[in-house]
Image 1: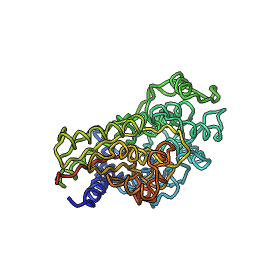
Image 2: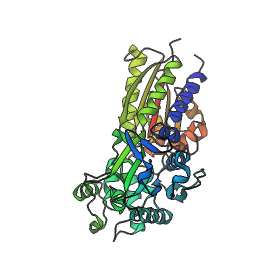
Image 3: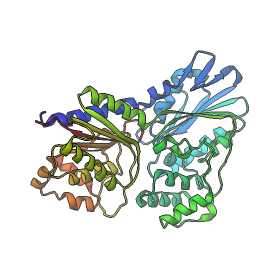
Length: 428
């Protein structure tokens, strides 16, 4: 197999995963409208029972999701408001798109959250509120609970991002410091009917964690949030914490897309390219370097003993790892995964590794992730790049940049966590 072919194959497999995660297609796979009845999953809604339909929401994929809803319902939509990341390219006729800060919330997001809450609070028993939520919604819907200020919430967000907290922990804290998360948006809309379309960016596809669950009853408590803050030694005004709704009525949600669907598509593509393929898991969490070591160990076993797969082999995994910052460099969890993995595989044989975020963003960089192979360390040494030092300094971006090994897709308009691909070619 030519040296460039595994790299080409890895990119093709990743593109297949992205295509499967297309948010507009995902929504249209789960909703339909025959001119009278709106079907959402297994639920049916006779639209003659509603006087108004509003569409609200937030997230990296929310514009495309809202476009799918608008393409079905058109003029039946009275209006709506969606908070989206800066630079989102979409055009809607009935629904306002409002650029907001991400991953650190800003005043634009707070203004948008206020407008969305106003729409919810104005809804009556003959109103239908359709909520579209995807990854990124938590940061894009800041509604700080008094006396917490937006500046304090921004500082808290930065601390949690740097702490290594999981997305579940992060969102538990967010829910109890917000006026909109943890089911509070749906509570504000009562007695309206609320239908939520969710694109999952969380391990396990828990609807209460996706976007911090603005329309989903929340089982977590203030005590849970306090424990997380103590765990990561983060101080903040605890009087801002408040309980969230534990039960909601007239609410229904559907998970339209997830990492599992993207990984399934990647697997089909890999098999079509001739690889023996195994999906390790779509629910992988943990410290990025530890997860990289685990993947490298499996790749070494394939190289040495042909198990659990014969070559050519493709290992796939999804989920979302965490990076505990120890250095002052630049990078993201996907770039760090690839750097740690190639170090763990040094001298073992031909392996191509790709890891990238489906949203096109990895940490505070303009790269989705990175792609490297067994020749990368040799090429790096020729440029006087120290892989170990870069890893220790959390500086994977500046390691991969001169090697042309960064994967730059730009914002993809979707977000179903990360895709990891390891390819071991056929023995020559």
